[in-house]
Every structure is written in structure tokens, then in C-alpha cells.
Length: 352
Length: 280
View (tube, one colour):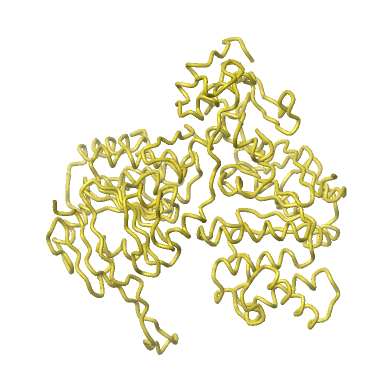
């Protein structure tokens, strides 16, 4: 099945006082209709900049290369007018903070209707009727009354539902949700994630779910891409990525996340250090300075994202031999510390 | 044994007003509605609940940053409700707080060293400059920072380092209770784990009681021995963590637990050297 959204070798750089900051440095992704791709990474990893590039919303100073294909059409070079036509109609986005994304002085119904009328020449009455339908679709209780409410009169979850209604006004093929539940309480988060999954299926959308929370993505995505320092370092079907992760950074994310099903006293394994500068990234593997298993050669060699032997759908950018990675994760999953795992698995001194 | 801190039937009401210039009182909101809770010396207690449930107001009452409308607060068995002046200052030394957003709670114009030394100045302790510097260095090292960071400003630090500075300031006067209000929710996961490890280490090394306020049940599971669940101003369930997570009793606790996104258990991939996991 052909992808609704394809990103090929996307690079985005910003000029800063210290030099060129490469926020996204060669990211390739694809999502088909009816599927959800989870994009996981820490602040500054480039996941939101990737989303903004797909929306054609990068600031004017950004240097961009690569291709972003929406149903086969490249949007990176598209003129502003064409982009305006595509945004909302072909691709739409839901942001983290619904209070700052909604206009505080306009009624919710007017804001949904505005989105409807941005792409369809319909009467005010028709736009209002469509807005009512949309609020119903996203499960806002008493939608007819809520049309005339102001954003502050809605709860956080209802506001996020209203934003989703705005995003869906013109039935986009691709929906990007950037940390859509981060500002919400956990019970509301569960409702919004369920809503997004239902809408994806009903409307046949391709969805990109961006989150720093592996737990959120684990339950909601078909495929997960782990982003680190502007690159995808691992990509696999969700179950596979969580059961048999290949990249030491993915291991670090998994072992540093507190688990509700772990006993108290279970140790978390923090990832030491912090992400590298994107102005002067490490010359070799970008994770090398924080990696417990790096060999001296990894300081020079920059690993490409490559499929595992016999598993096309699982790609990883790591210089460790595949057999050694399997052994290391097996020990980490059994509770070994990185130092113990490393001591138990021979890593040839001369190995790249 | 006498609890370190004890709250009995705490109530906090806030007036509801209408109008801008001629404000009139139209009612009250009970943010905290009859809460009784005891915290033992050295105990880690998690206070969980959703936005607006009153958990932060309760913490402010326990820290005596707010006066309760009614109810009693006892510290080491002594009724300290309504304490003022020197007595309240002395009590403050014993109970310190770490906030969610270290950027907002650290003065951007002061160096890290000055920020960490501030509690000493406020409480008129350790007046000599030379000794003060040494003590600040020790505190920074205790929270995993280099003592050389004393000369830097908050904006020069990462989020995790800033939270460490906030923690160093909080433990400066040797408190018996640390209240941490969402201490890691603004941090990335890998950094979050570092700060959680630090809180756990300090709690053990210093024998601190810890009141952890958070919406994140996994963080509570990791750090706390006992959990109090708050809903609409009241505690609906208080139980040892093992019990609460294994068999929650209150429907609201069950609802909260069911909503937490779960990571599948890590599995060991089949290894070529040991094809059957049962053979190991």
C-alpha cells in the first residue's frame, strides 16, 4: 500500500550564533492510511521540526532539503498558496497545549466553522451544521450547546477534542498529533488516545503520533521510530521494537522509564550525560558519548540506518554486531546493569 | 511512634467572587475538604490525583504556606497550626520544597552558589563567607553537580542540572521533610531517571521523609512506600504502595490505574547460545 505521507532524507538547519544547527539531519519516514507511526525522542531530538516541515510550517530562516511527499506530491518546494490549500485539507496537526492553540475570545463553534470555511465555499449555516457534526464526531457532550461556549468554559480534554475537530474539518489524509496528551490528566489522556485511534480508522487517515513517552506510543502506534539528535536511530513495528529493541538509546529509554508494574526498589537505569550539540555533533556515532557499549572506533564511524538481517521492517543505526546487541539486550531485559551486560558480552576491541 | 507530620480534618476554602471593581463574594470552593493524613519520619508518601483535585493546596497547607480554614497540623506531636514569626521560620527549616519548573523557581540573576546559599542567609546561619562557600560546594556535590557550577547562572544549565540546584537549595538547611511537587514532569525520561535516583538516594542517606506530589503513578510506584489518592478535595484511598497497586479498592483509584499507558514487559530475544529460555 502506498504511503499517504513519505519523508525522504529530510534535513532542516537553522543559523545560530554558534553556527549552523542541524535540527533534522537525514530523516526518512513513511506512513500509510489507516496506520499510526509513533515518533519518540527527547526534547530537541528533531521530532517536532520534522512535523513542522511536513506541514510546511518551518520558519523562514530554516534551510531545508529532502522531500516531503503528501499522496505523492512534494510539499517542500510548493508555493505558499498551494501549501495553504494542502494544510487542513490534505494534512492537519493537533498540538500539545489546546488552550494556547484556541483563540480565547472566539466561541468554539466559530473556530471550528472557520476551519470548515477555509477550504470549502459553504454558507455560514452549512459551516455551523458541519461544526456541530464535527463536535459530535469527537465526542464532545452536548455539542449544540458547546458551539457557543468559549474555550475557557471547556475542560482540558474537551478543548483537545475541539482542536481535533478543527484538524479534521476537511477530512485530511494525514493527521500529525504532536504530544496531544502531554498536558492532560491520565484518564483524559486515555480517552483522547482512544478517540484518535477511532477517528484514524473511521476516516482512514495516516497518523503520526509524536511523544516523549514510550508508554503512550507503545499502546497507540503500529510502528515506532526512535529519534535521537536529528536522526532516526531505530525503526520497527511497535511490538518488535519494544520486545527486541536493537539500539542502546532505545534500551536506555526503556530502562529509564518508571514502570507501574515494577516493584518498588526496582532500579531505573538513567542514560548518563545529555544529548549532543546539534551545532557540533559528535563526528562518529551520535550516541557514542553516552553509550555504555561504544568501542573506540565508534567515535569516528557514523552508522547508517540499516535493516536487520532477515527483518526488512526493523532498521537500526548501530555499529555493534547484531549478535552482540541481542546478547546485551537479553541481559538488560533480565535486569543486568549496563556494566554487567557489557562485561558479560565480548565486544572485539578492533570491531567497527 | 509520633508521626513527623500529621494533618487532622484539614479544610481550605477559597472565596468565589464575581465582578471586577465591585467584587462580591458569591460562595466558596472547598479545595481541601477534611483531609487527615500522617507522615512518618523517613517515609516516602505519594500524593496522586488529577488537575484541580487539591493536591497542591494540601501540600501548601502541610508546608504552612497557606492557613487552613479549619483543622489541625501537628509537627512531631506539637500543634503548630497558626504558628507565626520565629516559630514558623524554625518550622520552615524542617520542611522544604522542590518545585516542578526549576527555571521558574530559580532567580535568573543570581549564580548557582548564591541560590544555594540563600537559605543560610534567610535563616541567619553560617555567616562567614569562606565557610559558606565550602558548604555550598558540598551541597552541589551531594546532588551530583560539580562544585565549580557555583559560579554559573541558571540559564547556563540544563533542565536536569537546574532541578539538582533546586534540590540542593531544599536540603541546604538539613530538613526532615522534602515536599516535591511534580519534580520530574518537566524533564525528559533519561534525565527524569537521574533525578528520581537522586531523590531516592537523598531520602535514604539523609533519612528524609518525602512527600511526592504527582499525577504520574509510575513515578509513585518507583519511589513511594505509601500512596494517598485525592479526588475533589478528599482522600479517597490511602494504602501501602504494594497493596494499592496490586488491589486498588476505591473505584477512582482503579480508574486512574487503568488509564496509565503500559509498556509491555521486556522479553529476552532467543539467543543462539541458549535456544530455550527454560534451560538457563
